[in-house]
Image 1: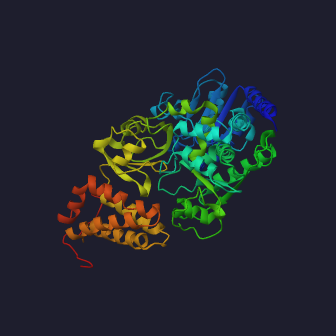
Image 2: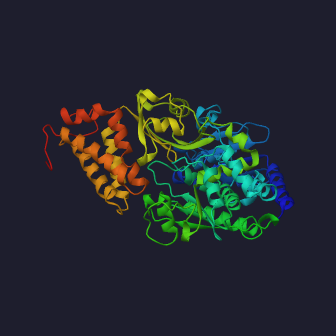
Image 3: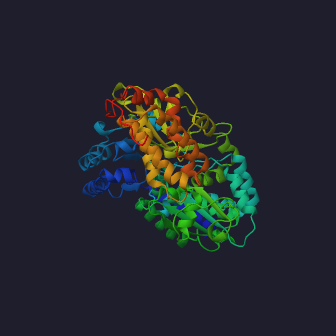
Amino acid sequence: MNSIELETIAQRERERQQAFRCRLLCCASTPCLSSGGAAVQSALQEAVKAGDLNSEVTVYATGCMGPCSRGPVVTVQEQGKPDVIYEQVTPEAAREIVTKHVVAGQPVRSHTLPADMPFLAKQHKVVLANSGLIDPERLEDYLAHGGYKALDHVLHNMTPEELCDELVRSGLRGRGGAGYPAGLKWNLVRKAAGDKKYVVANGDEGDPGAYMDRALMESDPHRVLEGMAIAGYAVGADQGFVYVRGEYPIAAQRLEKAIRAAERRGLLGSRILDSNFNFRIDVRIGAGAFVCGEETALMQSIMGMRGQPVPRPPYPAQSGLWGKPTLINNVETYGSIAPIALNGADWFAAIGTEKSKGTKIFALAGKVENTGLIEVPMGITLREIVYDIGGGIPDGLAFKAAQTGGPSGGCIPAQFLDTPVDYESLKALGSIMGSGGMIIMDERSCMVDVAKYFMEFCADESCGKCVPCRVGTVQMHRILARITDGSATAADLHTLRDLCDVVRDTSMCGLGQSAPNPVLSTLHYFMDEYEAHIHTRHCPAGVCELTETPIVIGH
């Protein structure tokens, strides 16, 4: 395939879609499918057929539209009219949408989301621009929305060095959590000596409540593949791997299907788009180990070994898969590449803050009215996310804290609601951006119990290779359990702090090094709750059942 053929297919698909008077977009991402989305899609198709509307109305299965807690979600697109989004659609409501809205022009108000709903209106979609609009299993649909134009552009108009420099100027930072400048990492791999290089997409998100990567892989798999291919060209690699959690079967299936479709069209494989560039991508499925989100453990798993971290240096840029230079980025990072290549570094750098450029996807969860997937510009305040996009705290309760960064992050209390959400600001508060999970807690949440939950998670997920993480996380969880059951003493708090320092400073990999963060942040901002549990045997939030007198264990 060449550039002309690419545009011909895209234009043909646009014309095909424009021939329909109405498009019914039915979300087929995991949240909506789990609440009956497949039955809704079938009901829409049956109603269209029953009304003899197949020539003018088409039903599309799409990716995530965002308001996941309101699923199944259906969008009605009619030429010359604003989109209408329906929530909590049942098969009965789906048939009513066809008979009343599509045929009679009367929207079904009982299921309609407001067009100006802040959850939708205040987002800035770059990576998720196609999500909810295209069929993730049809390459032609992706091409009709500009797919693979960025790859075509860089292959024929940019050198690898120019491409890496453009990425540096964009200010894009890795979206997997650490926030390392993507352009610098790409340049390290590009300049590394080696006859073989690899590109890896880390789709092994394991943070509780996080599903940003899953949604992107399910909703727009070609966006990830195109970003990886551009990366392969930039660094001189001819092989890529997408590492997907075992718990993400739909994402893995759609990626596999997208890879095969791209290969058939000459968009992956040999001599891509009539160039001398060759690049293959394969999918590797993880086995559910949280530690495999760490890059060295991930590489061990790809190579067929036990997923455990190994000491660094050498770093993957010098010696990664099979000892060869390897570029590893989060799938959301790759999702940003095509827009940057098409629109330029300056366009991307104009979004966000001085040091945190672009947009970030968050999985907004917990005690907030509107939960779901959001993409917002860096620098937006926590208050805007919670009260504007999120719609505030249910039942008129007060906001207490936001947990960002999952088990590696921290809890941000109410006095920092006006803090910009960017890498530097969150780090200053003792938390991190992480991959993008954001859990909102209200006044009924016990922060000691929250710390115990995350520590139990870290202890369970420790690979056991190094003593500080293997033993320290278990001991920290035991102390937190004693605090929440009323058997702890003041000495336990000192021991807990010491353990946090030891585990953070001596663990081998990022799992252990960051495991104390939820404990440290809650100790810093909610010490009064710890002291109430220990000194007065009282849980201010009413969550923990404490004994009236201390039961000293292990002293």
